[in-house]
Image (tube, rainbow, N blue to C red):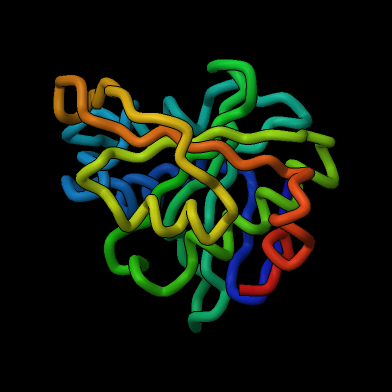
Length: 183
């Protein structure tokens, strides 16, 4: 799957993306906000992640900017279908891309795919309590809190307090405006 928004291109990763992926994600401030990312992060980790088998309807995408002189990899976004009853939305951005609305723009594109291309009715997500910026992004996307719990963080090596969220894609409150591809 691919998507293009006003400022972003979302596409699958290729083996040749490994160096750019490592450069974008290998920041302690990113790793500490994710559950599965090892820390420190190395080129071999990127190569292994990019080599994972993906199906034709898997949504595991690199986020690249095209609003800069040269396209640049700034993060990833995915729907994890292996955990739980509804797919889980996850994403990260490299620190110099924070605060520019890229996560919301990429999220809207993936919610649009989930609803219109994949026919999904509900998504889940979560964020660590000490990462409220991610909670604000998820709120803009139409997610609402469903509970609190703990999530193991590989980078931190321990359970971390987490907020669990859900988004009903058929909810009348969400509407097409929340799912529009425009930022």
